[in-house]
Length: 104
Image (cartoon, rainbow, N blue to C red):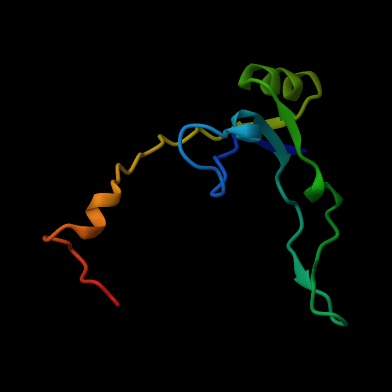
């Protein structure tokens, strides 16, 4: 079995610097082995791969790698991308030199 280990990104429903919730955990999930195909009767996506619903969560990267090594799982660590912050102010909505004109 092959697996990838990555850190979940922050949810779009979380705002500001708070509310990281479960997003700081490291996740190990198996790489899909079978392609999803539409079901002929209902049209839903289905697959013979039962491992696609499996997702193991760890507190640190070291724990996830140690688990993979202990259970002889080939793994790939996906690096966490740098977080970019967009600094915005409410006053920018009323700036005289706006890049986009008002739509209403």
